Image 1 (cartoon, helix red, strand yellow):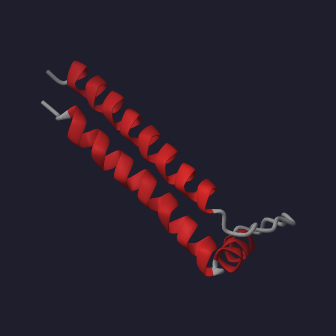
Image 2 (cartoon, rainbow, N blue to C red):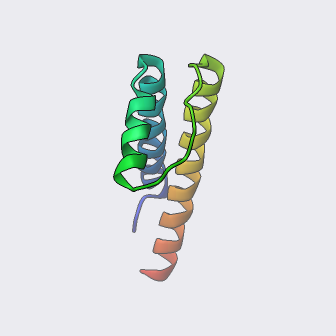
Length: 85
């Protein structure tokens, strides 16, 4: 049986961690260059500009994505346990 809480924590940490990395890229000033490279590599042309770092937005982003990741992991483990008894 899969531990729903542990799976939720792993998914929450991964999703929140990725967004923490993004917030740090914005803070460091490297986000725009990375974004431009990713779009160039995918042959996409969108005139978007990464805005300035906002601590409130960054904290909200990391917390919300961590919670969403936890919930998705928890539900995924619950479904897994239901079908794999």
